[in-house]
Image: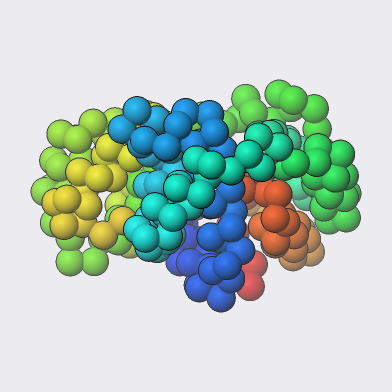
Amino acid sequence: MSGHSKWSTIKRKKEKTDGARAKVFTKIGREIAVAVRDGGPDPAGNSKLKDVIAKAKSFNVPNDNIERIIKKAAGDTNADNYEEIIYEGYGPCGVAVVVEALTDNRNRTAGDVRHYFDKYGGNMGQTGSVMFMFTRQGVILVDSEDVDEEKLMETALEAGAEDFLTDDGVFDIRTNPHDVASVAEALTAAGYEIASAQAEYVPATYTRLEGDDIKNMGKMLEMFEDNDDVQAVWHNWENEDDYE
């Protein structure tokens, strides 16, 4: 994994999440609403909704909240206003960045995203400018503390996982992007605590930053994450842990 510490990054984001639960719940609620709009309120017949529910649970969204959001979304025409857009670009020193957004105003969101790139030494690219550096994969993280690696691996592979990695205190389970929810459910049923479960854009290589570029890249990511329209940001910055 090129020395990229996924676990410490997730833990830091979890800590931030605890202080901004309303924002996180709002973003996940929007994802659920769009998934319901596109495929209906039954996760058994809506794989997209099933995946978003798995993601919501990994962010500690209570089941009652999830059910309430689904019920509301089933009768909410506002979800029709949102469209899914992916922006691509480069951060400092050519760090590749993929931004996933759900927006009801394409011009506003594009302007914000372009501004964040420009402000911190990057630039927004055209479709396909960096996506070739990433593959879409299901990624499930399990804290390795007090976990039997062989048993976890066996359970994961039997549930349909495709790969099993270890990195700095976490087991990193890779799946087909459409199998995230089913594998996560199997692991949860077996008693494992899921730290994160979602489809991600995983980079093939990583870029290391030095000096002021670390600060600029960190600030750029914070701006993206604070934007209500941005659902997720993926990048190939290797030493993200160096940003405090």
